[in-house]
Amino acid sequence: MSKEFNKRKLWRDLQQALLIALLAAAVGLAVNSQLLWRVLSGRTLNAVPATVDGPAETTLPLPVELAEVRELQGSTTLFIDARSRTAFAEGHLPAARSLPRGEEVAGVGALQAEVPLSTPLIVYCSGYDCNDSFVLAEGLIAAGYRQVRIFEGGFPEWRDAGLPVEGAQP
Figure: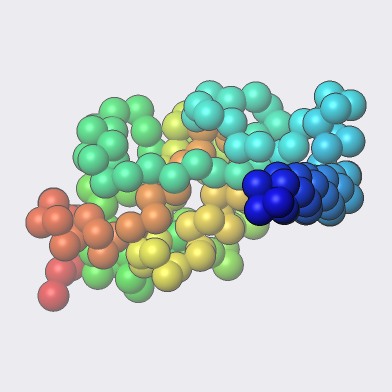
């Protein structure tokens, strides 16, 4: 009788486990129904492209690390400093151009007059806590630039790595 009891208990436990799994699947489908519908209907999910030369619809700038920024120094890439003009004057990446956040409306127009839209741009500001580079980069993308990246470590990471700095330094 003990053997029969164990079989019934095992069967009941399996039924309960199956019921729990089915309920979890139903809840998951219900919660993610809109996402699933978009995927099944072939619509995109607003993903960030994997490459810098992504399609014209690119709306978010991609990050770039210090090692790649170092490699791109001296290339056709233009570095744009989103910090204030005072901070720029105190020190900036070599050959960087100042385009402070808050002056981007006039500054982007001037940039477009001088710099082709196909030019790769790297925007930076005062480090990881600074959002100005991201906001400026979004504006540059909206203005037609397609190869826009942000150096999230910004000037502090560059300077702290002991790399060359232009401008008056303390």
